[in-house]
Length: 322
Image (tube, rainbow, N blue to C red; front, side):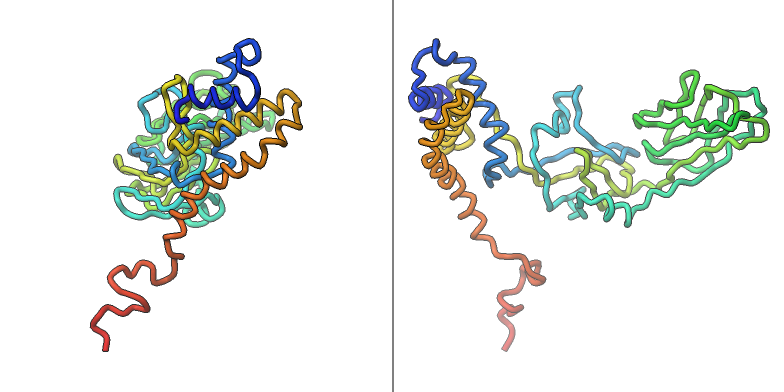
C-alpha cells in the first residue's frame, strides 16, 4: 500500500465509504493531502524531511523573504514549502552565526540612524533633490523628515524597501540606496527655517558572517558586497500526492497517512466512537514512523567542547601519547 490510489482504498475501508456517493474521490484526495501537508509535519518532525536549503545573495541587499512571483527562485513560497530552519548555516562555505533572536542579532549589528541635513524650509518649497553624502545605506531604514509652519511633522519613508518613498508625499518620491540620489516631494512645505533631514543606516558591504531568521525573512550581516551562496538546514513540507500513481516520501508513511486521514473524516462526521476506535492503531503507526528518526539521531553523540577535535581520539589521545 504505497501509492495515492492504494491509500484512498485503505481510507475507504477504514471509514466504511466504498462508493463515490458516500465520499467523493476529489474530497478524499483533499482529506489525504490536508493531513499530509499540514498535520503530518506538525505531528512528527522526521529526519527524512530535513534538507539543505540554498539561496543566493544579491549585492547591497540584506533582507531575503518569500518570493511569490518567480517560481524558479529558491525563495519561491518559502514560508509554505519549509517548516523550520536550523543550524548549521554556511555562507560562501564559511560556517556562520545563525539566530532567531532580534535582540542578539542587533546587539552585535545595531541599526543606528545617522541624521544628515539636506535643506532648510522656506514655507513654499516642497520638492528636494540631491545626493546624500554617506552611502550605501540600508533598505527599510530611510526617513526624510521636517516640520510644517503649523508645527505638523512631515515623514517620507521606504516601507517597501524598493526605493519608493511613502507617507507625507504629494508625488512620486524616490531614493537610491547605493548612490544616495534622492528626489522627494512633500505633501506640505516645510516651515521657514525648519531643517529638512535624512535619516539612514550606513553600512560597509562585505561577505556576510551572520544571519537572522525572523518574520519569515533572512537578514544578513554584513550586507553582501557580491553574490554568495547561503546554505541552511531546514525541514521541508511533504510533497502533495496529486495523482493515483504517486507515493509518499517513504512507503512506510502510507498506513500512517491513511489512518490520520480517516481520523479527520470521522471527526468531520462527528463519529467520535469510530475515531476513538482507530486511535490506538494511529498512535502505533506514529511510533513506527518515528522510529527511523529516533534510531538515526541516537547514533550521533552529544556535542561537547571536544567535538571539533576530529583528529584526536577519546580524551584527546592521538596515538602518540605515552
